[in-house]
Length: 374
Image (tube, rainbow, N blue to C red; front, side, top):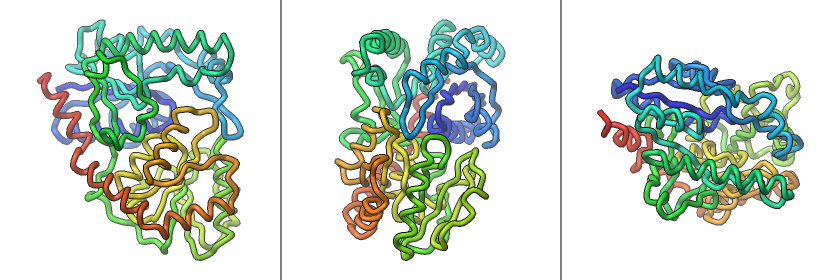
C-alpha cells in the first residue's frame, strides 16, 4: 500500500509517534511518505524517511513556563501557512496514496476526503476549546469556532485513533470529549513508541538515576535549572539531562559530578530502560514513552496549557508519578524524587502499564486497521 502520514509539527511528540508507525509500516513493505515541517521534518528525515514539506497550520508561543494564547494566535497568523491548501493537493496528486494518516493535521483530513480517500486521524485531545476558556468574550467566541470546526472534521474521518492506553488507564482521558455518535468511532490503539522495550539495550548508569527530559530550551529553562539545583542537594542521586536543540552545552559546563548530559537527538530509550524516574513536561508522547518502559514520571506541565496539566493530573491521581509545577522548590522536587525511588507502588503501577503497552502493540494495531483497504 501507499500510505501518506501527515504530521502537526508543533512539538516533536506528534512526530515521534508517527515515526513509530512509519517504522512498522515500512517493515511490512508498505510505501510510506511523510508530510511535515520545521523541526518535525528534520527529525523524520534524520530517522531515514522520505519527507515532503507541508504548510503549518498553527504556531505555539510562550514565555516563563507558560503557553501564551494571544502570542500563539499572533504567531499562527504571522508565520502559519493558512493558505497552503494547493500544496497539499499537489502532494496528494503526486504520491497518489491508498490511505492517509493525519496526526492532528486538519488540512490533511479535508484534502483526503475531497479525494474520497480513507483517512485516520490521530489525536490525544478532542476538547481544544478548553484553551480559550476564562479568557474573555473574544477568546470564548474563537473557542466556539474552533469546536465547530474540529467537530465537523471528527465526523468525516474513518476512525479517530487515540495513541494511549484504553480506559480506565488512559493518560489523556481528561482531554477527551466526544459526542455519542463520534465516540463510537474512537479506537484506543495503545502507545505509539518509536522503540519497543525488547529492542532496547539498557544504558549502564549509576543508581539511583533520574532522567530529565525537559530539554532546557525556551520557556522550560527554569525547570532545567531547578533540576541542576536539586542535584546539588544530594550527591547520592544521579541525573542525566537531555539538552534542547538550541542549547549551548558550554553554558552548562560547570555541572555537579552526579549530573551528566545527553544530546537532544540521542535516543532516550536506553535511558528509559535504566532510570528510576523521568522528569518531563506534560507532553503526551514523552509520558507514553516513559510509562511504556515502566518508568514513573515527575511531570512539570507548561502553565496555562490545559492539555498538559490534565495529563499530569492523571499521572498523579493514578499513582504513576507526581504532578509538579513551576513554583515547586528544589527541596520539594528532591522529596518527590526520593518518594518515587523508595516507594515501590509507583514502579508496580507503571510496570502494569508496560505490560499493557506490550500486549496492545499500538503500531501493529493501527497497521492492521489500515490494511483493510488493501
